[in-house]
Amino acid sequence: MQAEVENLQKSCEDTQEPHNQIPFHFSTETSHQIETHHLHQGYTHHQYPSNSYDPTSPLSLVLQQTPWPLGYKPIQLPKYNASVDPNQFLMTYEATIASAGGDDPIMAKSFVIGCEGPVTSSYSNLQPLLVTSWYHLKEKLKQDFQVFKKMAATSVEDFQCIQMDL
Image 1 (tube, helix red, strand yellow):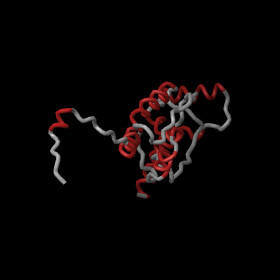
Image 2: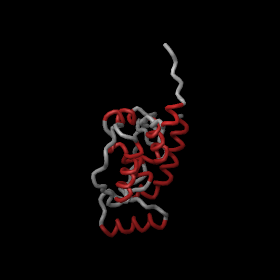
Image 3: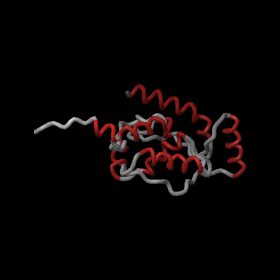
Image 4: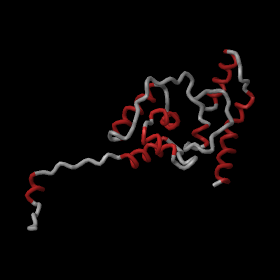
């Protein structure tokens, strides 16, 4: 596991290497040059450089070091406490993040903000560095918090029911 963490960290550091020379305080002109550099390299996110990560976070190193989009400020995120079907929450959550300019990695990073109660506990108890994508986190959420619904019986099923004498 330690070797895998070190390999992921090295991979993240390699992709972040151009950012290491960015000064913490910089002018609008410098910011424009950095954004232009990112656009030419296929980056869609912008932030101050960060080589730190939380080894106890459920998010993988790559997700932790994915920069937030420039100007990313979602309106009030929907909250999820496992009281409704997770699919209902996910539909609203994904639309909210996407409307603010977030993509799949940002959905994974923002998820902790939308957690409440048992969902927060479940998230914080995930194995460190386990979550590698929004899809992975979303499937885990659906698996862990799927609401079990009683299926409505049809009259045909009612008549096929055999009653036993007690």
